[in-house]
Length: 350
Image (tube, rainbow, N blue to C red):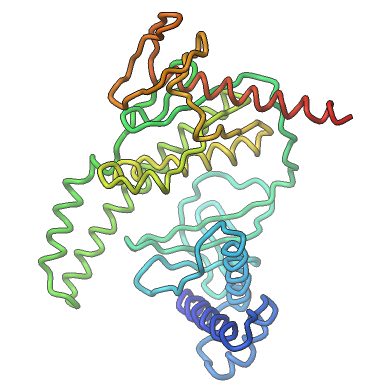
């Protein structure tokens, strides 16, 4: 099944690129889906795949092109059979207490993460490089997204490498540094992989062991960010963060691995969508706002602030400031100022 979907993706992507070179125009979703009847006659093994899953491939490819032109993602790439595999079922899927019934495949035993509430829309089955299968289920709960309301407790967040997140309330959440914790195990398994002969079965087994370590790191990293983002969103109405240029920050090869392991970008994404679902406000403050250099007590701005200086005394009001807590407070106050301006400007226009 997944092999048919992967082949159709690569075939369609190659045809889109070739059509663009020849005519200067691409192929629409309908044109790609219209290829299927003739392709099934030429390649009879495509009939073994669920027809709706092949239709979804055309939808995903057109969406990938749209995201590329809207500058939300890179150019669509070809899929390899050696990487992560996935197949989507847009309908005719039944989920039980301990099984999922898929078209053509039938019932498959699984562990349900939590009870499903609502109508099942799409089920995506994916196989990671460690060999494990996962089902991602999209459910329509029939609830409208509430309007954002800024009336309530506001909190500012300042992310870092030693402390993953520092709040304006003074709470500090230590960076778990998952990659560093598993680096010894990862290094050992990678060394064993390098010792295996290319193309041998033992090399494939060693490669799978390396993939299992990477999968473990990914899961614990996502679990930490999910739990922390849920806690922050549930306890606050306005969540303010700094709009960091993470892509530019990882150019520093001394800190690139640590910054990538922290995953600030995905943490912000989790905060954003969880806040939107609950009708809360997620706001980003400009990255050039001097949150660390400005004293939150008297708003005095110092000229420079070296990274190794974690506490500093304000030369104007002589208050002792924790660098990260002070920055989080300034981010919170700047976000509230922006929200207040957004309320006042429409009134001025009237």
